[in-house]
Image (cartoon, rainbow, N blue to C red; front, top):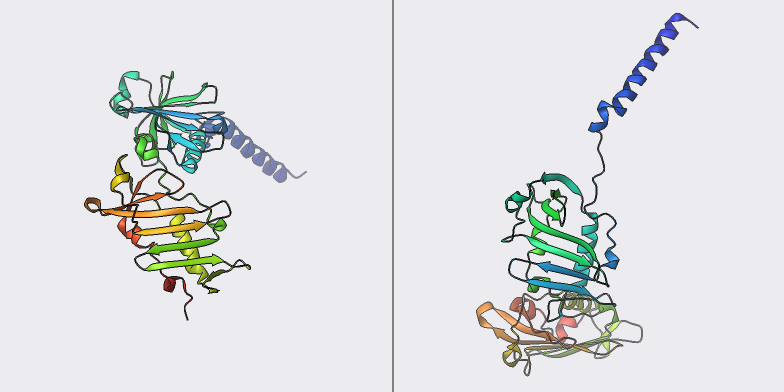
Length: 307
């Protein structure tokens, strides 16, 4: 083999050897490493209760066998979708850094008694699956401070949980007013000062009104508006007497194979410009912006196809 070729191959081997040494040695610390989870092995499907202790109160969110969630001693409906997303998010939270190993500095990170929030996840038997305290937001909007009970380290983690767990009971309640599958609705009746309008699904599944085709998009948009309507607030427990449901401003009846659901829009609460609203499938009285409830008034002309 020519000497020049031998020298070339020797140089290549030296370079490759040097690269291997760098990667296995000094270069190893520069390689991106996978950040460890804060709650390794957390089985979110096993969680049956989430107990939150804020400076002012302690309450529990509990999951029933049918997947619904309830919150507080009053067993208010909680948002099941939000709860499932929250638990899945907890399982994915990672350690960004150790913020401190000094227990006396808990106050600096919002983990003290005046500000911190303790959270305990438990299974159906009451066994603790996770127990941690939530502090303030981290140095950027996407991180936060957290301490696992029994650990001396205060962690900077990948998600800011301060706003999530700082909420009172009312902040966890489900603000969706009508729990109905819009695809299952086969008739809609709207009664208001504009009169009464009824649309139904005909034998072919198309929407009809008074025997003639109705505007399918108008009906679909209306049902989506009702299903997506959220409460601005919850009325006081004694609000039923003054809510005006005996003579509602708007009455909407949604027919389904499983039975009808009636939505009542009652009196206007002047000081907040909101109307009392309730659905027949719940005893809860909600407050909804009058501008939202005004959009629920529909006449036959609104359901008629454009010419």
